[in-house]
Length: 190
Image 1 (cartoon, rainbow, N blue to C red):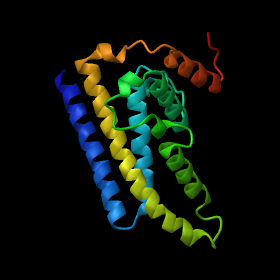
Image 2: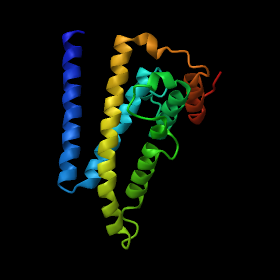
Image 3: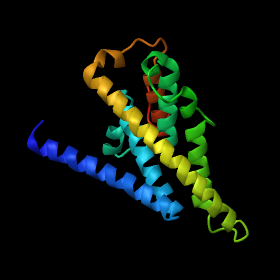
Image 4: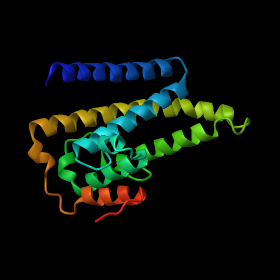
């Protein structure tokens, strides 16, 4: 690793630590929307990293090509990989249900979207939404930590034991994921 790459990595670590500090501070001071906003960004980034480590097409490279991959698509890709390669996730602290449709992560994303898109639309429900925002922020903080930890675990595994990331899993979820992502983006698949 050259000096520029090392410095970039150090700045990236500082940025992520700062984001976590901002989330914690926002929750402690009652700025739940701020926390939720930062959590969503952090989760989206960690899902992107996990997809990259696993060699999925919905990783960071998609963004560099100008392809927008929604967080829900990344969640689905990881869910498929999790279900088709259970051996890879034996030591994970996350279960397959965490990534499943209507699982904890999917529900958090849906609740976050409901909150953001309906916040100022009904004055009667406003105070209830803000009360729910506190729990959403606390759950988001927990999920953010879990996704950071999973990304670190998979990254260490990819560097120390890359052969374990190439486990034969039977049905190939990576190609299925690629077809699904490309299909949703209107591109042709093989």
